[in-house]
Length: 304
Image (tube, rainbow, N blue to C red; front, side, top):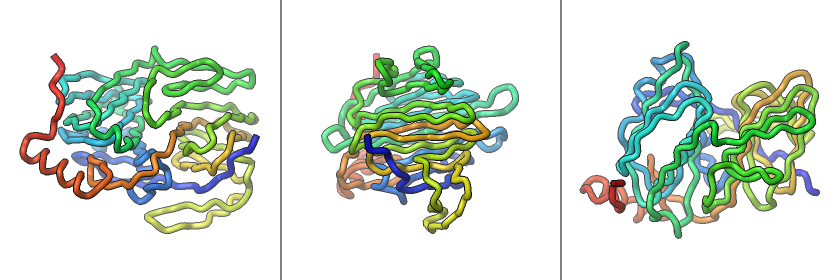
């Protein structure tokens, strides 16, 4: 089988979002269409309540899916369809905005003040951008975890590994989303679908990817930097984008590694993006904001 090589390494960088939430952005607008069908990945782990309590007050979305995965603390959610809920450690909120939804996300820390997780934006193709919105609240108890003989642990949110399926199904871009922990001194090989975009985002420890020992290219504020690492090990906050292939290999040395492993089928369509709305053309984008201003943005009835 053809093993994927590293295409690019992107180092997450600090930014502000919402009403003043401090977070690290792994990738966003400047990487389109490099990670198609994915648009954005935010890492909002923090032990400072002043960095997250203002949250993300009411705002619209159209044309995308937002996937929130929590590690600690809680996020309270409410939306224009009448959905309300709280997601906590290990929970997932998979929201398909489709034709339009207005929602808010308000984070709360745990007893120590820690709140952490990730939000991924996935694009929708033109054929599904105006589909009915839907909201899936996935509890940690619904997410299967498998272990290999070498001690690798994998939480499967979406996708399938050796017959074990994640709780999220029927997504048009055929995504795979899992949380992988590999112990020290271990090599992990995972099959990947040829033609799909595949990336890993490291959240703990360190690892070597694809057995590569060449200099990695980091992108910081749009500028590429070469960082020669003798052992080629990458750490927390680095995103590894892979070239095409049938499998990927991750190796650990003296420390474990934990990372999000995400893949999806590229859409290959034009992207017109402004703020929380992503369409295919500037005209569609203009229509969306005009509808939001005049009160016709929501196309589907509120849940009874």
